[in-house]
Length: 588
Image 1 (cartoon, helix red, strand yellow):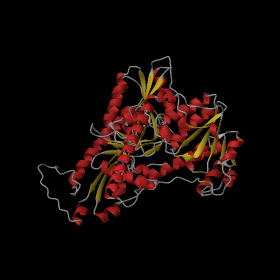
Image 2 (cartoon, rainbow, N blue to C red; image 1 turned 90 degrees about the vertical axis):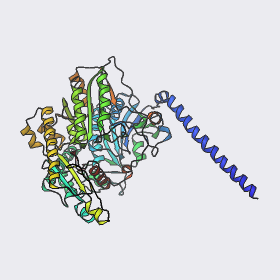
Image 3 (tube, rainbow, N blue to C red; image 1 turned 90 degrees about the horizontal axis):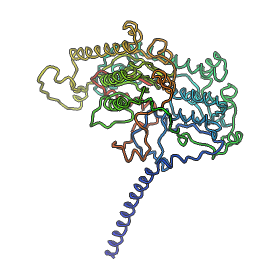
Image 4 (cartoon, rainbow, N blue to C red; image 1 turned 30 degrees about the horizontal axis):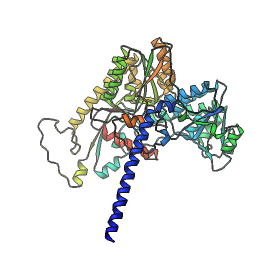
């Protein structure tokens, strides 16, 4: 009996091992075949006559092509498909306007997880699409401000005939957590040095309430954002501005059902989704998801190219031993990209797309130096995304021309240093550090020892020099008097229209407009666009990338407030005890 058990155990173990081995071999053979046949498969996308492109972004929309692959969200059918970036979606919309098989666009507003700046830039492409005579329809089971900002560009807005469906329009708010009292309880003290009276980064670690200057800066930004939203809605929906403003601020438009939305003239009709499609004579097999409708390659008779480089994420120092992540801008990484552009004589202009709240002052300076060197050979145009502030503005300041959206946030010319100290905490838990020093300031970066007034003065001196250098770079890049610049610096935040008015930027316009302007300045008519970094399919990443696959914890957190707080804490530790050019909050 015992021998039978051992035999059965051996058989099951051997069978299981063989199954696992062959399964792994099968997957890799499949991936290898997929890689070989990528081009053929990509060219055989079947688009039926009278199809409608569905714009939906349930997982957001990245500016820069991702170099990471994520097994968590990978689908088998996406093995050989490149995830579309923001610019490629713009191109796909333009392509759809000229595609005889495409009859229109449907906005799936239940899956519209992109920023208001991206929505506004897409609206320009949508307006151009409608000039072809084709229609855009919007359908949603429930909308908020951001998704409704897309809906207003549709020829018709439809919601289901159900009171459980709702439209949620309200004002704007920002919630900033303050940690001083928590730090006192835990025995953590934080010194925060600001150069710029309105530079609010880090004050929430040293205070238990908002400073007057920071409150004024945030209030001004929210007022400007609110005015932009009201103007967009009332002009597109032909609604009285004063009436809509009163309704919005009084909360009359919060959680209204579809029938109420019709009465307020905010939507056009109620229908089930199937009835909506039937009313338009659209069959489900005629629906083409935007990720299944990639733009075709641009072929021209000219060798001229315009390089588009995406700078997205916080700015930080890196080295050869650091893995390059999608959401971080490293000087070394961008130096390699700029060197490639410098050597390619067919590249006649550079468009730098900046979507960054800033970060390390030194890293920002190193990137700016490379841009300055490249500018000696070709024109450099900056296109600002949702945010290009502090260090994000720093690296933009040398551009020949700066474009941004009305909803973009920029400026924040100032410097901050966050200096945490854990001495009280380690004393409370019974840890005693004995130290031996050789030389003054040898222990300057010790987080378990208190910071003296002399040391704080040293930090402030370095930061003041950084602020002076920041203003000097902007003054030279923007050809602006230093005294005039100081009035709009000091850490102040500006919307797109305000930044154009005060001279920090040049013109309202999106990425496509920046590319067109780059061609004008470079004096080229026929050109192709080359993106850096390159876009890769899942299979290409698997075979080519040297990065580790990682699951980003922050991306799994649903609460925007909690995610924002955790990132704030992460950045505070990452950039502690060094000059930082960083935005203190995000607006959406």
